[in-house]
Image 1 (cartoon, rainbow, N blue to C red):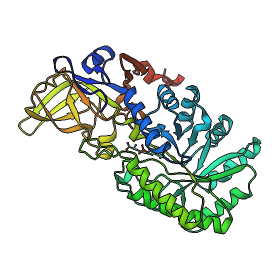
Image 2 (image 1 turned 60 degrees about the vertical axis):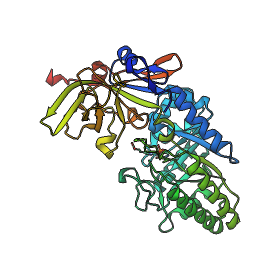
Image 3 (image 1 turned 180 degrees about the vertical axis):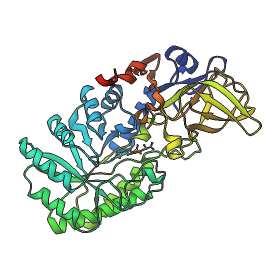
Length: 434
Ligand code: LLP
């Protein structure tokens, strides 16, 4: 992890900063993102994937964490962006991101979102099903545009991960199923359409996956499909997008895979199988989200209460919780944490760090070893860069924490802490209730 270690009086350092100082300056809870760590991961994607394979490209999956500042970092590292909603597209636009380097996903895109994408000049619209295809063809025709698209397929691969974040299995809500003739018919539809420019296929089989087997299986199925399509329809895919899903070890158990441990086997298999099938190997894009940003972030919380329930359990209650990180309660995700203001003191107790929400399931970290916990301690939860800020809610009318970007000597707020006024923005009391 970047710039992590012990500093003044046993304070945890992160991204070159004393975390206790960050908490005092910006308040808690606080998301802290290390710019250097994000850049390092982007560079690693470039060096070990993009530069190693002809025609390779990577789009950062914004759903993991997206702010305008993040768009600027990703842009300056030469990556594209995977966007999944009108709101994410708007964020990229406002940041001045080159939209020809973006992919728009979504299994239920609205007409407004499709129109927005066509107007904005999104690089590829990844079409998720037949009805979207027809809507898009009509919209593009009406606007006198030709939409560059990929068709998302559900390759029927069961990735080894939590069932909520599996997306490529048969029966998935995402993509064209490979059962029956739906996909072949869709390809025929695209080829006959003047407003659609079909470039290739896309899959994303799931998230937080640790071995390449499922991705390689999906590639295998994809090439079989492209072979059959070439034979039946004459369609030649110039490009494929193999999605993201590359896992990050939240517990630091030594299984933190490099991105090449996924992409090398996928590329080897793609190249070999295309050669065997007599197909030109299409250009390849990947869409890592978590792998780029997870370890680049930590969350800082202030301990508000310490509650010892006999010798059963000690609860350490903090000023955030499932509103800023829903992953433990939603997926049972386990995180590492530390008492950031007392890194030099030996652990004598095991505690459960709980959030402040009105839910018994609002448990952030179980089994944390600490020195005797005290009100006012600072808890740092590690590897929270991905799917925390982006999944935050205002449950219990709890404002969303600020995000601070740290780099060298700088610490800049890139997303302000919400105020109570922010929470009420847009609320109205109708006349008869005044
Ligand atoms: N591409 C597509 C089309 C996706 O749907 C996703 C994630 C990605 C790329 C990036 O996947 P990654 O590399 O980050 O695994 N909220 C869940 C994760 C949902 C992922 C949804 N799609 C979580 O907190 O684990």
